[in-house]
Amino acid sequence: MAKVTTVKTKPYTDQKPGTSGLRKRVTVFQQNQHYAENFIQSIISVVEPADRQAATVVVGGDGRFFMKEAIQLIVQIAAANGIGHLVIGQNGIMSTPAVSCVIRKVKAVGGIILTASHNPGGPDGDFGIKYNISSGGPAPEGVTDQIYEVSKTLTEYQICPELTADLSKIGKQVFEVDTFKPFTVEIVDCVDAYGEMLREIFDFAALKELLSGAAHISVRLDAMHGVVGPYVKKIVCEELGSPANSAVNCVPKEDFGGHHPDPNLTYAADLVNTMKGGEYDFGAAFDGDGETSWCFAGIAFADLG
Image (cartoon, rainbow, N blue to C red; front, top):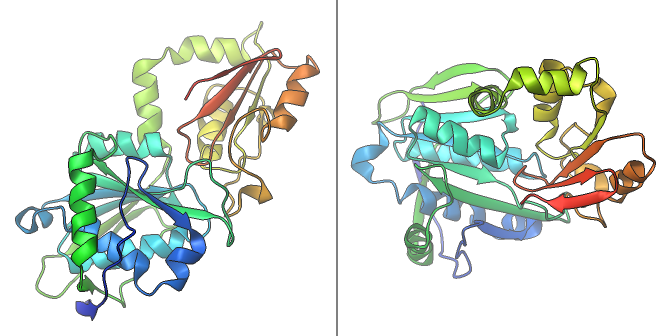
């Protein structure tokens, strides 16, 4: 039985989220007492208490430093506040577009995304917490204002400090929590639901022919050690048949390999130079959380946002 503990805290006046969430240096979250806990509690507080036991919240992030610690805090605070069900990407990994997809698929009340997008990661980098609503889109101003108002007056939060979820194991983990019905943490493959949605939108047979047929094009995809790596490997390489060496930097890293996960001409210079060599027909690079990509045809380029 997981025990609910009430922790006294002090409010912070700088936790006003925008549509991109709350972004700060990692050290702000680490060195200010209860800073992350306060903001997570403020997010959970916008879900009406009467609706929480039946509510599902989706959680995922881009793999950056401090993500896994933040996810465990979300698990502990959600459980203590009566949220019935969390859906979390395996090892915490889930791209921002995939979180939106899963929110809609499972009819969640919202989702919490751990990312600072194209900002640098690592212990000296940035971290962010973002809330998306039931439509899958970013929380509108009315909701972010509500979160901010809670954060400015928060004097305590509820947490189950001894409850820990295994983020590595796909499947459901059920916990008994004081005064609430069982609390379920469901770990899912981060690619599956998003891949299903893509198959409904795009002609995968035609794409497979384009990427691995007799007259296939050659592509170069740089995931920049962000969240898109597993999607590129599983969908583009394994399912659509593009050679494994078409995709590079596909293992998400806490510091994005020491690089800046911003797919522009400066930070994706390696891809730009590779494309200039003429070996590849198409190239693309992706930012940390998978919301932004730069695409190259030959040496021309475009920002697809």
